[in-house]
Each structure stands twice: as structure tokens, then as C-alpha cells.
Amino acid sequence: MSNIYLHYALDQWFMLAFQPTCRGEAHLFRFADDFVVCFQNRWEAERFLRELKERLAQFHLETEDSKTKLVEFGRFADEDARKRGKKPESFDFLGFTHYCGKTRHGMFKVKRKTSSKKFRAKLDEFTEWIRKKRMKLGTGELLKRAKARLQGHLQYYAITDNSAMCEAYRYQLTRLLFKWLNRRSQRTSYNWKRFLSALGWVRWPSVRILHRLDPFGKSA
Image (cartoon, rainbow, N blue to C red; front, side, top):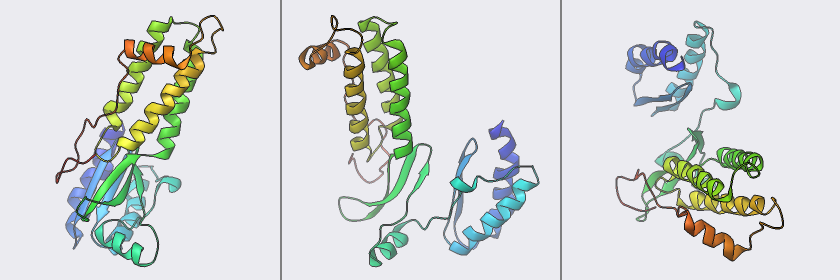
């Protein structure tokens, strides 16, 4: 419903009515009800925010103030922030924190990593899952399903520049799996060596970049 409704309430309005009035570049990126709009000129971003609220009100919609903000972002924002002795701003979109970074040659580039909020939520979700399933599933089946959950996470988050956060997630999930397996009973408890052997049996996934988003190189 969000895709259908916002196609007319937002997408068409932006492309046909607002974007043509901009003097600088203006681009809209939307997924369901989550979107980011990029402007070359700050004053046009401020105007867009004002007019957006008026536009959405016509459809009985409103922006979520806690998730709506103007962010100075990009090569010049990065340089200006560092001159003031500050870090450039970042923003979250679709589970990733987008932040200003550098290539190996010192050139500006947009980098992405798993957002802290999503990272914690995913671990909490896994903890709740294994807490409920550890007594209902056999060890082999439990390991296979835990593997599938880790693979699903990596299929989405294993992108350029995010290998460290993926490794951190894999490590934390592995430790949680070890902890909750050993809470079932003393008779079936695992030492670390035996646990690693079981992970080898199910071919526990390692982290490798699956989605290359860097057009200038192959750095992870």
C-alpha cells in the first residue's frame, strides 16, 4: 500500500512538480515509506521539507519527526566538518548507516555499514529465536537453522565497506549459539573444540563481500 499510495503522493509530485523547479541537482530514493532526498543546494532541501509536509497533509499523512532531518553530506560537507574539527554527519537508510569516507587514494566516497540500531535488533531477534527453539529442535537441525539465519543476514549486509560489521555480527551470533546450546543440559553441553567441530559439520558461513558497491575498486 505504501508503494502505491506514495507513488502518487510523493514520487510523481517530486518528479513532475518539485524537481523541475530546482536549480541544482535533486534526487529521490524511496523504498516503501522510507526515503532519502538529495539536493545540491541547502536552501532547496529546506524548501522541500516545508513543501513536503504540506503535500503529505493533503493525503492525511505526516512525516515522523524523530526520523526526519536535514543532513549536510558529501565531499564538501566532509571537508568543512574536518576544518571545524568535527566529524561529518551520517544518516541511516534501509538498515545501513551512510557516512563520509575515503578511498585508498584519499578521494571522497560514500561508505555504508550496518546501523547500530539494526545490529542490536538482529542479535536480540536471534536470542529470542534460539531461546525458544533450543529445547524443541535437535542439535543438527538447530545448527542448520542458525546457519540459514546467518546466511540471510550476510546476503543483505555483506556489501562493500561493511565486512567489519558483518564479522562482528557473525562473532556475536556464534557466541550466542554456543551459550544457548550449553543451557539445554549438562549432558549435552559443548566445550569450544567440540562446538567448532559441529560448526564445521554444517559449514558455518564465513564473511565475504557479496555485493560490490564501489565502482572504483574492489576494497572491502
